[in-house]
Length: 213
Image 1 (cartoon, rainbow, N blue to C red):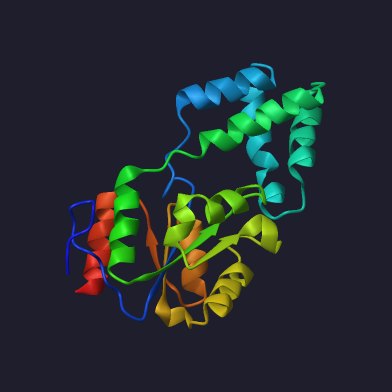
Image 2: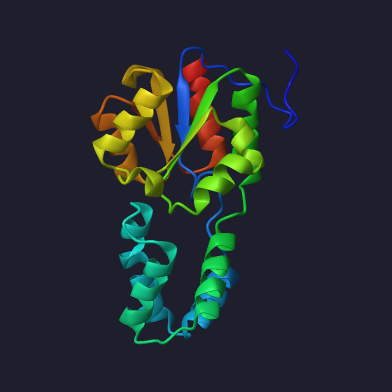
């Protein structure tokens, strides 16, 4: 078997499906410049903006708030009055900040794919990310993409993991779940899925190779 474009050997896990989180596993953390640009658009007070940003994020990720409602909720909390154009700019700056892919994790994904390992994506994200995940180049790597905002349920709850297993047609014993948040990994393990807390791409590669051994 030929080596992959990354220069590493393909990783083959027959009978297993590796399910990946997206944010800060496949994607890089938004940069300080990204965060500063978003804060400036929102009014410039980071100490007020970021707590509000995260406070309403779960509702966005579970699909109970639309994009417009999410940003309007932050607007009200900050006491701001944003025009529609500002809402669009905030959304765009935020969306774009999550698009940079970690090259080393991408190499692991490619090596898994070349090894014939089945892959899926499970992300706590708003519905707006669904098209990017499926129709961008990353979509070619995954058999199925699961977005919490489309499903009305999110990690670490058991319902989303059971849905993933059912849609993939596998048992929990056949699944491996990768996420940077320990609470999400523990949620997967609670339904019987093998879980791994992501720290670095090198650590991830070593872990997956240990499963293949």
